[in-house]
Length: 395
Image (cartoon, rainbow, N blue to C red; front, side, top):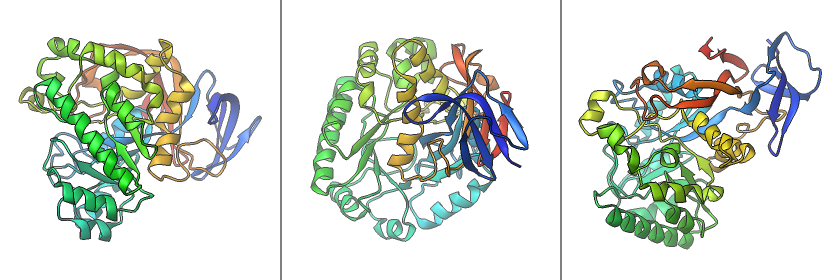
């Protein structure tokens, strides 16, 4: 069935324009005015955006599906406007062999959105990396959830030398020791050393979940280094720890209110917004698990930044779609243009709503933003030319 999205304010890369979009099968075939199709979607008053892409999620399958799985995680993604996500390798059963990678691809066929996978680099899996030939690799240089082991410096250098230079290596460089002064000093030192190594091999790297102004300033000195920020580091700080209690634990940790405000000041240097969606059920959080669910609140939080005149919508949409597609080599995604995949979302910028964790699609059913009033919500999602979500509900 052909579909036309009519009357919306369409994001066309450098500006918003009132246009119609004609979709046939899974592709955008025309952008213009007075377009006709078998089915018409009224987008009046809506922002029409490319399907969002999240380069950093933890969907927990296989190994810990009581926390999340590819169905619930992808439903959370769609409800938040994400038509593509990239899953991290630090599962209980880590994605560090071709067999594990292929298993994830098979398991993800039931998902509601496209799920891609970062491959984990270890001290001894160079042959597995070569056999798998993944689009991206994730390397952990700081402690984190899961069974990914910190690399020996010689192993890191070998991965930098061997992994295709046109593909990004994603790096977890943050330290999580209790003393903030020490963990920041160690984080900055690790980042500086990593940049020196990246320059030596003239290779692309991507720094995950940057949480301080200084990290961003250091990373920006190397032109082949890209960065991401998670909304929770922009909207939460240690001021929220009393309210959240054990639910405040996350890696990297929440920073001081001063550090949070300083992070906003370097936002222009950021390449991607990434949720670091890391769902844990309430009992696991109470027992000390680190991480927040973020797929369903990310866009609305960032639109709050726009509404508060802290950032520009054009800048924002690029960092949640086109930039991510470019960095991670995803052709035909991230832009509304003729010939691209028809991954499109309609967002009602005036829709006011309150975050209620128990009503979220994520299996963990809680959010650090519980009770927060937001403005702007995903109304409709078209995935590969099919309407999968409409009027704030799954079709």
